[in-house]
Image 1 (cartoon, helix red, strand yellow):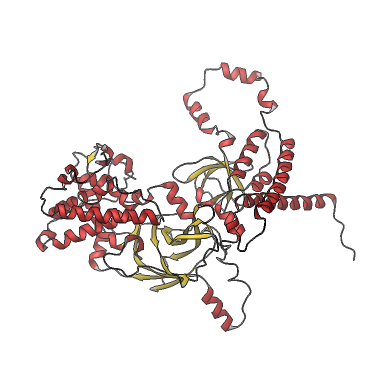
Image 2 (cartoon, rainbow, N blue to C red):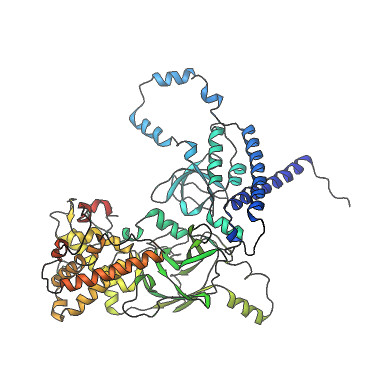
Length: 621
C-alpha cells in the first residue's frame, strides 16, 4: 500500500517545527559560545581563540538574519493606530467630568506598565485557581506575561488569550527567546516594538545553570535552587515567623498569650510538633569539571505540594574527599556544634492540610573557575509526608531531580538507564539511587515544654530552643504586660527585640549568643534559675554585652553565604571580641555592660533609633 501523500498544510507544519528547533539551537549555541573559556575544555584545543571567534561570527550572522526577519514582520516604533487622531467618542470622554473617583482608581489599577518592563515566564506545573482573581493554568509550558510583581509571591499575569489573574511565582520560570517568539503572537492592542524589547531582554539574560548544563558540567536533573530563590527574594522569612500574629480584629494576638498566674507565656498545642534528625545523603551526583563547590547543604521547610508553609531553614553538610557522593551532618567537634551544621531540627505547624510534609531540597553553592561567577543549584529534592501513620522512625527518602513542581525527573539520567530484570540487578540499581536518610526522634519533657512556647509555625534547630524561648518571653512581656493599653502602637524601647531577628540570618552570631548564654547559665545557682526575673535580667545583660556589641563592631565583615574567607574573618573577630568582652565584664556589675560602649578600647558603629526600638506595626503578621 502506497504511503499517504501529505498535504500542503502538513508540510508547512513540519517546516515550522524544524525552524523552531533550529532557532532554539542557534540561540543557545550563541549564548554558550559567548561565555565559554579555554579552561572549560576537558582537553587542550589548538587555536582555541580563533576557532571560537569563527563559530561566534557564524552564529551572529544567523541571529542578525533572524532579527532582520522579525523586524520586517513587525517593525519597531509606534504603530499607526496609536498616532491617529482621537475619535469623537474619545473627545466626548475627555470633555466629560462625571467620572467618579472610584472609577479612576479602578482604571489606574488596570493600566499595565510599559512592555519593556514585562517579562515572560514559563509555567512549570498546572495551577487551578481557588479564589476569585486567580489565573488558572491548565497547560504545562504555557508562556505568561508578568504584569506586576508583589512581595507576597503572587504575581499578576496575563496569558496568550488576554485573561489576567494572579499566580504563585514558584510555578514560573523565566522563558527563553524561542518560547517568547513562537508562543506569544502579536495582538492588535500591543505594539511590535514592545514585543521586540521583551525578546531582546530575554536574549541578553543568560542563566548560569543553562550554560553549565550545556557544557555537561552538571547532571541533567540539577536545577536552579527554588528555596534559595525564595530566601533571597523574600528576605527575612525566618524572622517573619518569629513575630506574633494578629487576630482577625487586629486588636490582639492570635498566638501569643500570658498566663495571669505565673506571668509566663501560655503553652500552645499545634497539630504537628515533630523532631527529626538529618542523618546522611547517599549517591548524590557531583558537578563536573570547571566548577568549584563552596557549600553542600539542605534547605528545609513545611510544604503541602503547592506552597511553602513555614520559614526556610538551612543545614550545611560535610563530606569526605574520598567519597564526595555521601553527605553527613552533625560532625563531632570540640565546643558547641554550630547551628549551621546541626542536623537535629524541629517543626511546629498548625496547618490542617492532609498533604502536609517536610520538603528537603539538596543544594550546592558553586563558583565557576573560569569566570568567578557564583550560583546556587538544586541537586534534587525529597518529601517526608507527616500525615503518614506507618509508625517508622527511620526513612530512606528517594531524591528526585528537577524542582518540587516537576514529576518523574531523575537526578542523573544514567541511573535510570535500562530496566533490570534480575533480582541482583534491581538491588544494584536500588543502591545507586540517590537517597536522603531521616530519623524521627522524641524530645524530652523539658524540650517539649519549651517547644510549646514557640510560635505556631516555625522550623529551626533544636539546639536553639532555649534561646528562642527566652526571646518569646521577652516579647510577651513587652507586648502584653508593659504596654499601657493593648491599642498602643508606640515604639518600644528594647534593643533585644529590635535586633534579635537579625541573628537568624547570621548563624555565627546566634552561636555566639548560645555560647555566652551557656556560660552564664552554668554560673547561676538553682535558686537563681527558678526566678524568672533574674533569668530575663541575666539574658538581657549577656545579649547586650555580646552579640549586640558585635552587631555594631566595625571590624566584623558583612555576612555572606558560602564565602570561606569572610566566614574565617568573622569567626576570628567574634572569638577575639567575645574573649576580650568576657574578661572586661567579669568584674563589672553594670547591667548590659554599658561601660563597654564607653571604653576607648572597643570601637563601635553609630547607633540608630531603629536598632534600639521595636516597632510592632512593621513586624506583626
